[in-house]
Image (tube, rainbow, N blue to C red):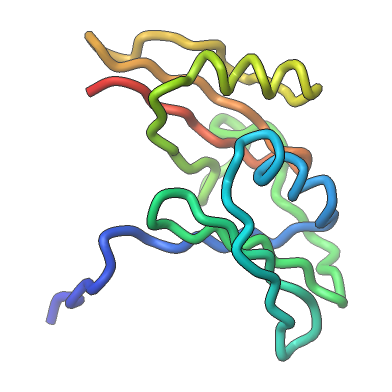
Length: 134
């Protein structure tokens, strides 16, 4: 039986090592709304940020896992390597990220006629794709 989806978006959990650095990136630079912090029953904190109707859950565990995602985005490994946010002001966002010292992996480029993409890396090496156009 197929899933009966009841929300028009997914929620995304990212396990993080440095809450302050990640909040500076997602909240302060990208401008996502920080709606709340929630303690985790297993020990740690979930920082909840809204991206449209998607909830980005930055999870900081008290007992930090030893393993980490390999850096390098798309060409470095299989699995979840990036997520996409559709925006109406990509160049402004890329400029803000670059001015704040974040790695702009791809400058704005045309992916297909009328559709542009750019890619930025968060402080822990996760890639965020920006998409503009239709």
